[in-house]
Image (cartoon, rainbow, N blue to C red; front, side, top):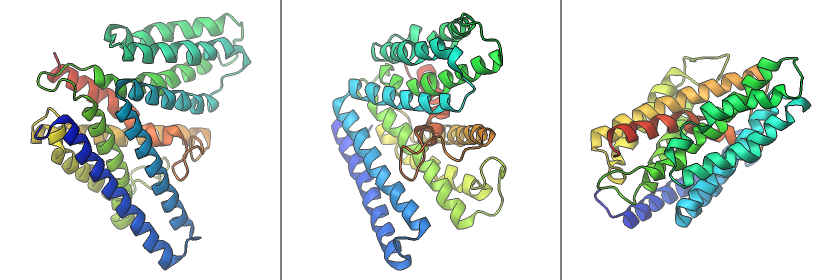
Amino acid sequence: MIFGYDTALVVLGIMVLAVLITASAVAGLLAQKKGADDPLIENLVSRINAWWVMAAVLALAFWWGRSGVVVLFAICSFAALREFVTLTNARRADTWMLAALFYIALPLQFWSVWTDWYGFSSIFIPVYVFLGMPILSALRGETDNFLIRVAEVQWAAMIAIYCVSHIPALLSLDIPGFEGHTILLIAFLVIVVQASDVLQYIWGKLFGRHKIAPRLSPSKTVEGFLGGVGSATILGACLWWITPFEFWQAGLMALLIALMGFFGGLVLSAVKRDRGVKDWGATIAGHGGFIDRLDSLIFAAPVFFHLIRFYWAV
């Protein structure tokens, strides 16, 4: 790092503020030119306004520190789990399984993250919760679609709880020379992955000609993918100063998490298409549901966490 911890956060905050102000100004000019009631402009303004709120909430969590970050992502996890479960075949016979998932497994997972109990948080969901859920469901005696019901809810737990919990878990990493600065790793992850999403959209709108998977996500194009991931890689490399990485390492890490984010969005789009819905919800104006905003982070966070833990942490 070339700046101290506090200075790095302030500089990051100013950069994000400048981007949001610029985006709002551009949206205002477009609204004057095309009319505020144009559906595209209306959606753009809604998206930018939502980004203002999300940036403010994230800044508040960072200001609160470790507890704020863990609580924020626990709430996001709860909302994402609720959205996922509503699209599964779970029925009344699965009430015990779902209650245990929402009110025992989720709090325990984030409590173990908050207390730095890696030995527990790393195996609790994929071992004990996965074994316990079918037991609770089987006790109710309902066998119709048993395997489908259980497998869907198990995947909901993996996606909405386990993967999301790797974001605040970055705070628990012990990196020599980077002690007390790990919250900046969350900033790096969120900025690169979300910027990759936005840049893929912009590159796709400007130059997109060849669709990657038209049945899954008609808006994703080869040009958008290459431009967005490439731009996010450059952005990540330029943010090396808030990380424990060298310039080239930050670029390589940004490339990996941007790729994982892209595939995360693609996979969860496949789930939506399978269930015949456009968005996971309507909670965030212009964006859809919580999973629509978290889908890229869900796949990128575990890879980012384990790479840092393996190569940089002690």
